[in-house]
Length: 322
Ligand code: RB5
Image (cartoon, rainbow, N blue to C red; front, side, top):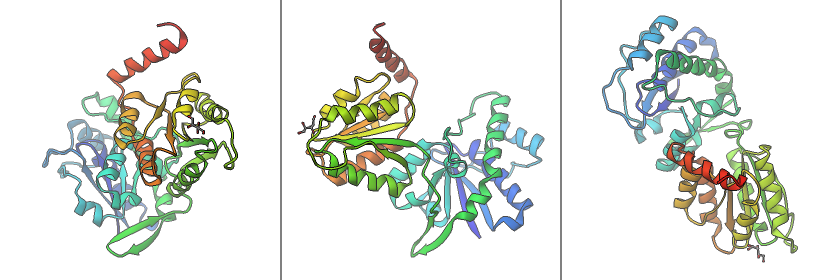
């Protein structure tokens, strides 16, 4: 028997929906595999029942009784014992990976795992109307209809104390990354590319291709332009200091390039500035720190809200409308 845990924030809406819908589905398709789902939350008031709308919609539309559901906090013990962790958002995934890096290889977002398409998050319906809950339920159900095929692609290796999931076809959350460097950043770029490959990210290396002296704006522009015209979701640029690349990339419309040489800034710039290009200096950071910065920067989400207003002002400055 394989076990998977669906994770949301409070374990009263999205993750219990996913758990109960999954278990019903697998019950009706026993030939598809021996799986059982449970659910948990990242920030739980223990002992809560499923929210009123969750209970109502599951009962009325799916003939599922959720009255036995009791909320529980995700714990290290739970993570250790399950085979797969499917979170509702990238932020949930990032939080779990940061706290429990040793289990990162079995943590995915539900949408990333199932569809490998854009639109990575199942939005929280908490506090919204019944209609919003209904849409959330339909969205989760849609993912679940193709989940079993994906589950069966996985190969299980019993790696001592924790099981390891591997799937050669898995390509991360299908975030597309453009990466570039000048001669000074070339070696570090190679290390970052190795990391991206290992993590299953889709990427394009836009040069330079060796350590011969080149001009960083040529490559900064390529990557920034690919992000600006939405061919790629994010960009990573490396030069000697990271400064030239950030100056060049920030000249391209719609690009918010962030020079980061520490993990705090990498996180904050995603959360607050919604930076879409990361720049680093190979003469400033070592490989270990650089890869950690990349990991955190790629895993973090924009928080929106008051930060969006500020980003709108940056766009106004860019358009000369400020
Ligand atoms: C190249 O020597 C160096 O100037 C470049 O890599 C970068 O640091 C520019 O900001």
